[in-house]
Length: 393
Image (cartoon, rainbow, N blue to C red; front, top):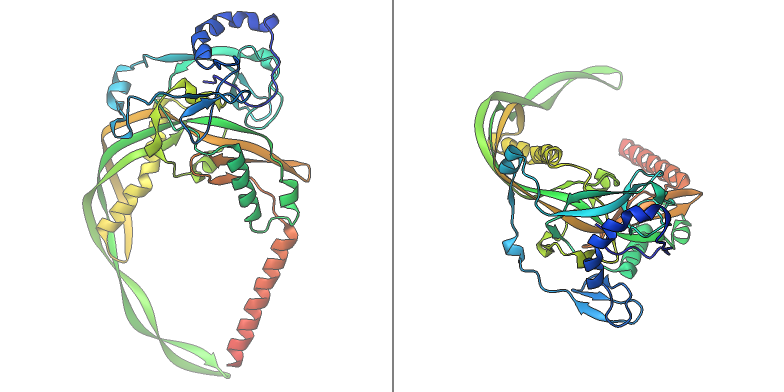
């Protein structure tokens, strides 16, 4: 949900296409009143790293009431009950969305806006294609922890530390375009697993073998140590526990980039409050619960496999079959904060994302072909020198 919108200049109108949005505007009127500055009437925006809203025009600050739920009291929902009974969330929120023609991201925005840009790629939005939809209200949110200036500092640090980057990249990437604060939707899953397996354990041992080779034009016999493996059947079971396993519900960001932003400070989650969203954009959930749960099982597999290999022991392991039971799975849906923008280099746009909780930066970047070639040639030269020195000795 988007309660207040990013710093892109807005044009407001009460005529034309947006007249059919009147019902939506009326429903959100009470929220907007809560976010209005008592001094000047402007929109209050959440100040990252704090617990208050700030008016950027007159400086008025409004504290956000402490949530009733503390981190140790965060509620989890029974996944089995939810899926078995097709339970619908009781609390819905209504949002106005439009799909970007450039990156296909789903943007939420003010129903009175007639001109806007995509929060994910900066392309102009065709807002006349916008529509309203009801979505489940997130249960928890991780408020922005770093502000725009800190985000820009982290970006510059990231750019300066890139290997094989063009020499002049830092200069061209000095001013990111339209950096937006965006809340990304996630599912989290908790559960325990019991996995029964069958496989083989391999124990290495050394043997001495004879071999022939040619030295100074003569055939000679030499000996060498060879590693062989003795295999035997193995079976058993392992238990694993998973807590707050994150599954992305975004339809606008690359999953690999989002996962590279982990870990998140989930201990700082607070109960959902519209005020934390004021001044930022919010992406809607694009992945349903069933699909997310299957993805969660996929993320559990490496940990389960690692436990099985450890249980088998030995020097090598071969896993032939695994049967896993998932016990007491629970879930919740949350919003996590990022700063997202792009920079232009050699007429190409590169997107990057900043974890607004930890400052971790990930994204697209250009490479310097000349630096890579020089590095390869340098590596070849070093190997050649070492080879010649070894033969001489």
